[in-house]
Image (cartoon, rainbow, N blue to C red; front, side, top):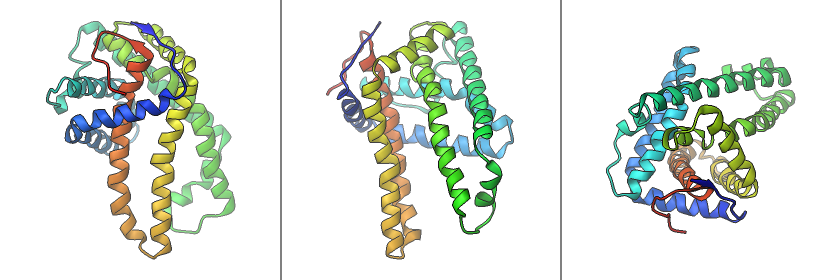
Length: 259
């Protein structure tokens, strides 16, 4: 395995490959994403412990989905148990993947603490607990949360993008995997910028546009029935495209995905 440097246009190619991969087993991939979303929503109900469990298991679930991508390419059946692939591996991999989960949880806690220093969350609480109109100051705080949250999460994303599979598939230590993941993302930052820009348009701009159109014709309640399946399908294809980024940035002996 070695690190590859790709052209910026590859960001678009990864999305095309993600669509191709999704078509290999759409029901299987949709099942996995639905399971994750459902589990995450349940976890929120359990204060602190539930959220921590999701963060701890995020690298494990990441390896599971990437394993499912491998299985889809090899025309194998995707089962829910694929999420536990990393934990069913060797003791050293199981230990490292859980350590990586602890690192991820710690980074998210630190990110949340820093964000709380930059944004006044007290102004945002009424937005979530009442139906009162949004004040200009509250709206400003929403934009600040989105901006600072995105900026703070970028280095976390770079560290975690490839590290789970590097630990599980390439037998790397946690520090080595984190460094290699960040290096791969930074070395191919132009491709990742295009890739993430396109996904932002697909997952944010398109649903917002649909919602605005239906609100304009007084069919706002109907919009959710259209946006929800589109968003779920888009989210699933995006997860499939993660495997394409792995194949492009790191060389191995597996089957090459079509362009």
